[in-house]
Structures are given as structure tokens and as C-alpha cells.
Length: 303
Image (cartoon, rainbow, N blue to C red; front, top):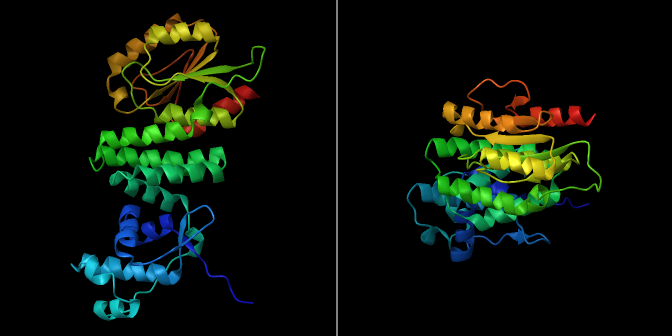
């Protein structure tokens, strides 16, 4: 029986060769260097030979050759020009791994290829369980993005663009979900303090709550303490989750004032501070730095 050849995704090829999806698509469209097959869902897939072909193009363009001159050449001609044979050495099991996907998403973000990110997020949501998606894709993606923004390799506007795309894809997961007609045993509110515009933490926390079957309201970012107190009264929540980034937490006095204003909440209401806290929390306030800790806390309360 003839063995079916292994085909590799656009994400994997770009990650393996260290190029952006935007560049590879441009080579295909403008210069017709290669003509990859497509799956039923429209996604490009590449054979071993096509990866080798692209690898020659990558090496030679980095040497200074123009892609317009290389495009008409066959693989044998590219090999002769390069002077030696290129071998593809990779573990086929890592095709479509989280690491490769995250690398490709960041490359797309670097070149403002938001349509690629939009497509990849859609595929991830359709094919990955929610909790696996959070811990193996979204959380590492956000951590890597934070590092790049801190190093000024990416801008705040790119961070906001990614936030917007994630929010749009997971709107159904973060919209308020109250499934019971009677009061549930526990109801959550999610927000960030006034002045805190980083949304990633509470976005992921909301997705975890959804996966855990919990009832919650997602109120977004930048909520004054007094407004949060009023929201709690109206929504009758007994647990509040607020997200705090490392940048926001540097202003200890601002955060301390915010926490003090939350003392107006009814005595039974618990407050979870997720992310960073510049002050020691006690009483009704619990600091959980990791999302895993939040999931464990939710499970414990659920039981």
C-alpha cells in the first residue's frame, strides 16, 4: 500500500524556517514560487519537498539574492546556486504544536497580519478544549507578547489589537452566563481596577469560569471601586475577581486606596486579586498570581 505523505501546516513551516506567514504568502501570490495544496477548510498544507524548496529561497534571499530572480528557478537550480543540499531535520510530531502556533501568531502580529491571527484563533477555538486552549496557547502567547512589549519589540497598539481579537473570538465565553433561575451557590464578577487597561488576565479567568460551569458577569476593564460595589449589589455576586498587571501594581498607593474602597462590600463577599499585588492582602482579599491557582480555588469552592 502506498504511504500517504505527511503534510505540514503554514504555521509549522513558518515556525520551522523562521519566516513570517505574511512573507510566505507574498512569495506564493506574487511570484508563484510554490503552489501548496489546501485542506477542505481552505488551510494551506506543504509537503517535505515544498518545505525544502522554500528553505532554499530563505537561505538564498538572506545571502542577498532577489526573490524575483529565484522564483523561476527549479529546486535543482536553487541547490546548485546554494552550493550544497539542504536537509529537513524535524520531528514530525511537533507539526501544529502550541510552540509553533504561538511563534507564528507573534510573527503575524509583528507584521500587522491580523487576518492570519483571526483565522488561527478561529481554528484553535474549534479544535481545542477550552482549558487546554487557555493553558497551552493563550496564556503562553500573552506571556511572550508581554516580554516583547517590555523589550519594545512590539508596541502597545499591537497588544491592544491582539486583545481585541481574542475578546471577539471568545465573546460567548466572557458574556454574562447566569444559567439558573434561582440564586446559584456562587456568582462571580470580573473586572480590573480603575486605571488598569490590561484585560488579558480577566479574559482568561472568564474562560476558565465558563469551562468550569460557573455563573459570572464580565464587566471589562477600568472600573472604579464605587462602581464595582454598586455592581455587586445589583448583581448579587458573592465573589469578585479583579486583574492587576505588573505595570499597574507598581503604584502601591493607588492600589491600596482601591482595595480600601472595596471594604464597602458586604462582609460575605470575597475578592480575588489575580496577577500582581504590591501590598499584602488579608481577610476577604486573596491574592492568586497564577491562573492554575484560580482554577484550584474555584474547584475547591465548588466542592
